[in-house]
Length: 576
Image 1 (cartoon, rainbow, N blue to C red):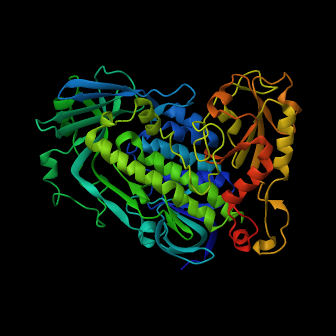
Image 2: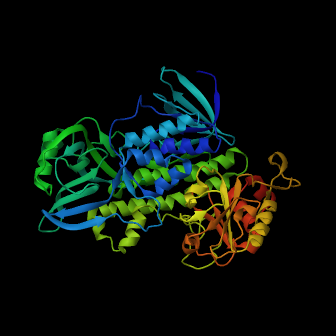
Image 3: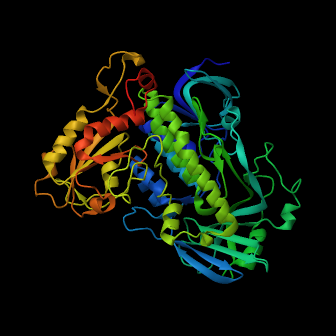
């Protein structure tokens, strides 16, 4: 066996989730190795929907512009039942949301992420498979099979399993994966259709029997390119008969994903379209096709010790609403900044445990909702349309009451700790002759951002000075003893926002970067209760909200919660 190599984080699986984890870790300066058993990206348009929340995360990374140039806008969905249009759902969001819904083939998403992480110095190690691993108090020892066929032992501080529904990491941790499988099989195909339906609209067309059950289904999602769609539908009897049994499994009981044995022909797809398409349509240029099976499962915990799972390794569910890949990407981003602090010695097991506490409830909700929508249709959701749309866009994902979220402050209906930090327009800076969005101000930052809001520059200056002296004491060499002094705030970047109604002094008289809420959008969306401070986490969620006069205590309290350094808490040096 080859000699042992060391890295900070080993990531198994280079799909969108593994690539997102690697991207965020590298942005935070963490060394990582990214391995994948496949020789190349699969050329299939599997997960195609890109949610607005994911685009916000990619904006912070500096990746959004590349996605916008490659993707197609998803404008809505046309719903037909028994040949008649039942609903037209327009994917409309409030004007302050910076991005709409988009569609992009998964291999294009992977290409853009792969190029991004390569620019940060990490390449995918192809044809390299994780075989097994063990962990101890100091790290993880993993055994890899490499492209040359040799075994390699890798020593890493942490391991992330982004290795899909049949995850080696999940099985190695002996996590349960409770749920079930849909009995139906589906066909997927990437084809062109010559109909005249509105550009950017998906189609869901079904046939319902007299008892209300659905016995035929066609779902079409637009893809980049003229008249191009990813279509899915039930498998016809002649293809089902080719299976070895009625419910082919994958050897481990997790019947989920593409199946390579049976590939539908264009005629199979055309037959369903002839029955269910709202317009007579000739299909052409089929790029690929496959059989797809759907399960719904979720692990009992998202990690154990120094090993974690994300994406399909943690949760699988119907593709309804394009929730799966996006949820996995957000798993990765939630975990990455926490691992970065742990690698730097600024956080311990308590912070890493918050990954499960925050993300598993999200996974449970997504699994339940997508199963419900798959069986009943999204149009049967009883929530008001605005809530449904914001939730599908993943803009309502939050961690209120979680271990990192402090006490609420201000109006009850204002963004509170744990919620997504809203974007807003209309910020101005002394030098720029154009207005900015808050996303513009946050783009490229990797750490926490302390945002101070007031109408008086003196209040802002006093709060900025208080923030500079706040921190959490850290012990020398990680051992109990006399604190070295305020520390653990190196990743906290402070910016100030001057209220619209403030006197015409300019923000550049401050000692921290300053902007003016010239359009009043920040005040409208954040609803500050007088001079107010906010902590925005690296993943774009609010970590704290507090009166500006309490900045020092609030920042120290948040850092105590968010860093949760193990040796400090055990020594009684901090309390949260």
